[in-house]
Amino acid sequence: MRKTQITIDVELDENHIPENITWNAQDGGIEKEATKATMISVWDDKTMEALRIDLWTKEMPVDQMKMFIHQILVSLGNTYQRATGEEDVAQWMEEMAEEFAVKSAIKM
Image: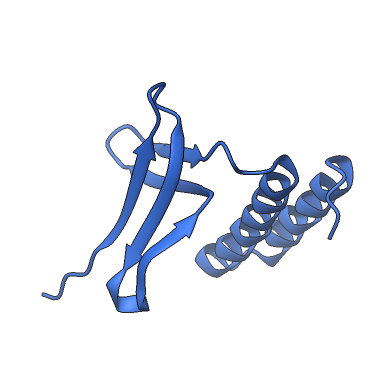
C-alpha cells in the first residue's frame, strides 16, 4: 500500500487567530505554499455527518472570501455530478452558486 500526505501548518497569534497558513502536498509538488484560507471537510460514517475545519487569516479580504466561497459552491456541483451522475441537481447547484455571486456582489 502506498501512502501520501497533505499537511496544513497554521501559525496563531496570542488570541488563537490564524496569522499564517501554509500547506504541503508532496505528490503535487507543493511545499510550504502560503494561503489565506482553507476549508476542509471529512465524512464521519459513524455519526453520518460532515466534520469541517474552516480557517482564514486576518489578512483575508472579504471580497476574496466571497470569491473563494463561490468557487467552492461551483466545485461542489461538479463533485456532486461526478459522484452521482445527477446532472439536473448539479445544474441546480451551479445556478445556486451564480445566484450567490449576484447576491454577494462578487466582482468577477
